[in-house]
Image (tube, rainbow, N blue to C red):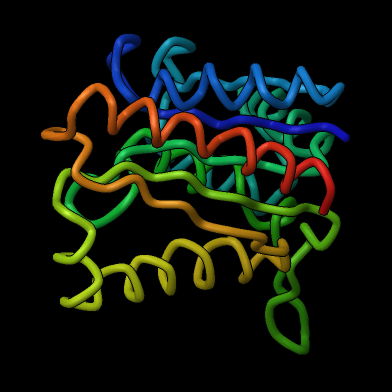
Length: 195
């Protein structure tokens, strides 16, 4: 199975990067094919320009976006790894979605409305958050983020959302707690390699 890991954190020493490395290692250990798109390291341009948007409508895709779309085409499973900042994905990942999951590639508009074009893709998302888990549970923030990130983005494109994992309170947890979180990635790797 082909797994595309789309990673967005600017610090290569972050806990998010440790998640990326561990998940890639676990998947490869299971004999899975893995491609990593490190958006910050690749200096991905997240800004969708007006002329680019007009170009999409005419079928003109910039070379950098064509390359990213080729990675998505290759993948059976796409895993997004990102911290939650200001209630959502990092701006670079948001821009990746704006530019890569474009009209004509991820969805199309027709006489009967919108049709998703990524029905052969499965999506799993891993997010880190700074607050304790109960803060997000009690306030309903998890439900809101799941609705926006999973339903409004991925299910809109007809991709099958197979899971969403949040690692909470990562800014203040102990080294032992972080190791325990990373140990969960073995089970996640097994799960996403079987779906």
